[in-house]
Length: 426
Image 1 (cartoon, rainbow, N blue to C red):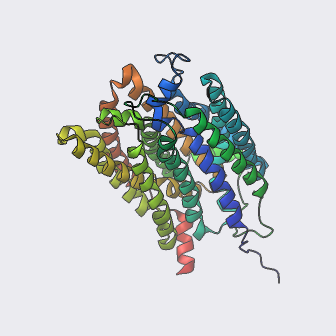
Image 2 (tube, rainbow, N blue to C red; image 1 turned 180 degrees about the vertical axis):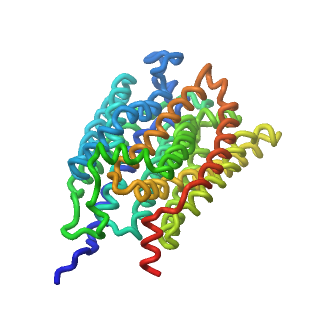
Image 3 (cartoon, rainbow, N blue to C red; image 1 turned 120 degrees about the horizontal axis):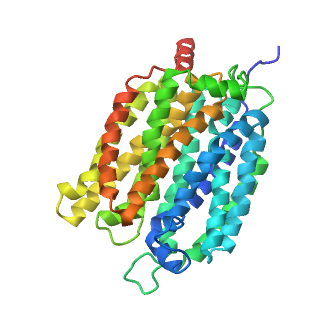
């Protein structure tokens, strides 16, 4: 008798393709963030620094566009499939990365290209859980989501760590700001090659599904409504409303946060340490979640770890007098923030897909990402108001919100799907 369910080795190729295009879309998101002050000098005279369309808007645009495009992207992925859905993201990423690279000297062209890349992002990010369900069994989906998240973090760490090496980021240097155009050209060509390659490597589904849950879903509109009848899903949305919003804000404003801590050089190290923490967690916690078949336990650990991480960034200046000590505290805190906050991402995405089943997976993931974009926009706007006058107060608010997140996560129940799978294995 022919096997009803089977694992295809090509699932890893599909996942790697998704990881590759995810990496470059995140690289493009924050290409300017780590050197925002230097970029402002490079584009001096091309925009009004007091207007909305300034350097910080390049990162903020991703969040604004996500509000509009998240649900349409999820709809296309859920109704047309991951090949057309994620494929749209790949093509847009390739085209607008090239535009951004070749038009790097013009702030207007860079802004237009950034908006195009922002449109591409939800087609890529919202497809993670849909891809994992089509290609991976239940006990590998947390790992698959973790590896997809790892790609996000690698893209961000490249933006934070490599960009300052390609740009003159020290204000003491007379060439301060030089190199922005060549950096964007390098990123543009590399991103286009990777995005188009990913498009051709992606496939819709294996010949034989990996498990019975793979294709039994409600219709998009029914699933849309069903999500909001699940108490655990509502709490999870609130957790992402806080946690992902904070991460988006801190990532977008990392250079300004460095400046508020007394760091003169736009070297991006606070952002780098945060992403290093994310990379390490992406290789550990989602795998452990699959191994022990537990979701809630690890989400509780994530929320608990977020509290001291944000407190360190918020109160370093108040606790220590030495600039070196303040900087050291900020680096440790940013590492902890990356490790604990963003490890909640892949585990949370998979948890949401499981507790909201049979709603389509990209719908549940899309709602979580959408929630984080909404608060991310508000947080960035408040942090950047009046030349970052309220940035310090916002960091204190983030610490308070992290305590609220920890309280909320205690009320969720374990995923029934992962619990049932554990009982079968036992």
